[in-house]
Image: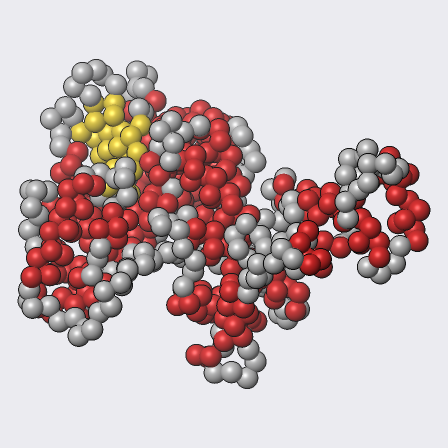
Amino acid sequence: MSDHTVAKFNNEELCAWLQERPSRFKNDGDMEAICEAMRVNEIDGETFVDLAEADITGLFPDGSTRVVLRRKQVRNIVSELGTMDVEVPLYVTPERVAVPPVEFMLAQTPGITEPEIPGHIFHNIVQDQVAVMVTATKQLTPPRNPTSAELEHVARRLVQRYPTLKTEGEDAKDAHILLLTRMKKRMYNKTPKRTTRGPNKKKESTEEANGLRRSPRKHNQPDPAAEPNPRQQDLHSPQASSSKGAGSSKQVTSKSNPNKRGASGSGPVKEKQVRRELLPPPAQQEGHHETAYTMERHYKLLKTEMDKPKRNYGTVSQLLDLEFPARKEFAANISPATTRPTAVIQRYPCFGEPRHLQDELRRYVATGDKDFLQDLKERLPREAKTLVKFAVKQGVLSSADMTDWTDDKKMRKALQVLPQLFKGKGSPPLPLKDMMIVYLKNKGNVTAEMKRDKKRTAFIVEKISSRSDEPIVYVVVHGKPVAVCGSVVEGFVALIGALYCFYQPHPPSIAPAMVFVEHHMLKDKNVNPLDREALESTTVYKKFKDYVKAAGDSGSDSE
């Protein structure tokens, strides 16, 4: 491919062209990382040749590996293209600024999945979705508001996800028009500034902090959750019982005379009702009935905590619990699956730590069970011992004297024999014993083992440290080390947590073995029923259940 056609490349052609270029810093991983960033952000040739310094910085955020060198390579390539005869549009506005792409989360307003959506729920959907988009774009550098193109793109996604939002009788390409119109009206319908003259001088503004208009009618609604102050009720009860129309409103909002009765109280009644209604209801404060707006608010707090040099583990874990539904949808909507780990870690850098990956496994499998991880780590060595004994009986292993074996060695042997016991369809790209775990001695090369990632989705690499006898366990997903652990048990739990967190499919050759892990070891009740039934119908699984029952090992029984 020639350089002068770069501006016409789509995303795939651009990535193929970049991979043909040699790395300037003798590291093949740099160009792969650059191409992956282009895929995640959907950069095509026309956008690539116009990348500015801020855009390049956003593609490779601080904290990632070799970030400075990768930025420099992209900067050099873009600079070289600027001196070539690149085919670009004849007229380019000098003030043109590339807008970084933003992946907006779709609203999850209660009632959005109903067959027929009433008008008030439609209004809430528009309000939540615009609030999510404004919150996301205000966190960018520099802050901005959503563009019209972004509003239209999100409106199309909402109509595709929830068909009941579309306009009846319209073509498929125009089904989003009504929703887009309402979103634009909500986005740009700001309350004008009041003049300081006349009776409006002391009126409060009805514009929220994010610049969006909120209806002043909500201020007149009673607050059922607010407990009345007995003193205020006694002082103002005659006015409340006899007031009608706008007369009482003027009396409440006007300045209080210190010589009149009740002026020494805690302030006007209406003022307090307004402030209470601006807070989320008690159910939302406790984590129930979350909306898209509250999910974005949780993520904003989470991002602030993750950006700190020393993160508070308890704070991050609590915010991850609150934001779990939105994060789950975010990971599931990324395609292809190979780009999900990078996109998730870019948004949530905390998942580079093993304990957060393990916590994510708990959220998927046993939400609310605080002892799940501890019980699992204590049970895994016993499960591994049973698997090794069963493998010896089935002839997969010749013999195994586990008297002096450590828990790590039992776990390693179990992960080697597990794919051999529960074989999948098709021929494996590598020996089955190396599909889930690889054991390297002191002179083993971890980087060389990771380059075989195209043949394995995820696995762990155990290497004995040259300075001590303690192992170093790397959790590898698509050829990249996601986390580093101090034992095989910890590494295995982090590996399964990464598969759940990054929504990774299982290779066909080890799919039955992974279903066995989810169903038997993790006791996950959300396993696909078809996969579970297929596993339970196999001869080897029936033999394993009979062996466990005959052995009388209650710690290995999955039931």
